[in-house]
Image (cartoon, rainbow, N blue to C red; front, side, top):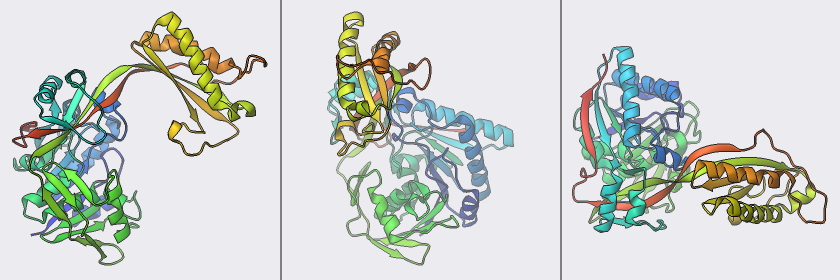
Length: 450
């Protein structure tokens, strides 16, 4: 038994090589699988249930994939629809699908798999001991969980298999593991389980595991002994190095990958170049676990935010930028607390020195100019704007010492305060134990289009 999976690109909305996709369709895949998103872009999308990618780009690319599905006559599956995989994001992509079908005269059968969890139900599950923290998970309470605006469970292969079993032309899934949409069909058709999960991990980001990460589609062939990875891009090659290295992508252990129902162990995997284009992998092992768990992701509002930006060029201030920022934070915070209360924080990030890692930065760069990004987070939007305005004169004129002339720095725009609205944080990095893999998910089927 051999199962051929075509992965058009790393995610819907990123774009893909149409020639590579056409070669993939001509190769006769058994399924087309593409990811719809992840948590990479931060908590806003999960918190609001919205997509990172533009609707027009998503619709254009999805229309082409729907046409490819119709041409190939095989299922088209997307996981983590709408970047975050919430129920609202699934409905958003379903609406786009219906629009495309109506415009083209198609009538595809669509299976919809939803992953959203009611915060109140998850708070109850926490109290009942059915939710456990993963390593480095934040401390939570039932109240923390109940305050989430959105919680999703990450579906595994079993839930995707249930959707495929409906005979749907298209499967639109909420939050899934990146690998589930690729591993599901090979597993259901009896391919080697270790190979199914390992190949799915290698293929999750399309051509990222090749010598040309932007080259578009790849094909992975699964069988009873292993898998073979073949890039479809003209200039892309798979090598033992590019394939094996992908186990470290978004994964702290290069040998172990946890999934619902068990874990993948690639300690004994062998990577062999079949030619200068393809790689064969065998020896991967799937280890079932005693309990079936799914990961939970949740986000909650933490307040409102206003940001501002100042440019500092004076060499003395650039050289002592941390001292300057620390003094501004202390003085502005004290003044603002005396006038608006306690419900806010002020942060200054120095862009061009250590703006990304902050105190974790092993070496601070020194340049001609740095930008100081002011971030005010507060309980209300009005308070965040008020405190940001109090920060304004400090960023413009604050001296390093009382005995020197008042400096003047630059704002790149006017007014310098930019309200960001509500902001969110991730607050769940936990697993939920299920007696039935489908217990946390909802599956429906409908026909859309003309």
